[in-house]
Image (cartoon, rainbow, N blue to C red; front, side, top):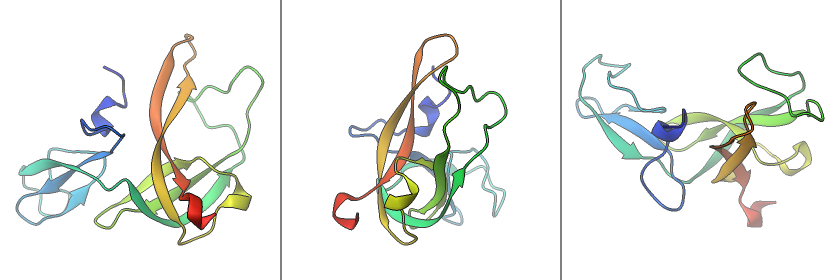
Length: 134
């Protein structure tokens, strides 16, 4: 099982999985077994929206600590941000450059593939501006 597989709902196209408390309706990402608000163990899995709003963003200009591994050609800065999905805000890699991003832009979930240090391929997620908003 890939480390990111529990983040995705069994849907095509890609959709993030969260959890919702059946007692107080708090929604979380990633999924978890205990509610952070009321502390009950009554969480059920929910598929999160594929689109949201860019709440804020920044450019990661320094190489992250391990387990991140820079590609052989060296580290390249990338954008990260918070996406408001309505019931929950998620942190995400942004599949766009700084010139394509603006706060409050509509963003869409997309798969993101990278190479692991052992030469394998892994799939995670990113958000990209919705075409008509760019």
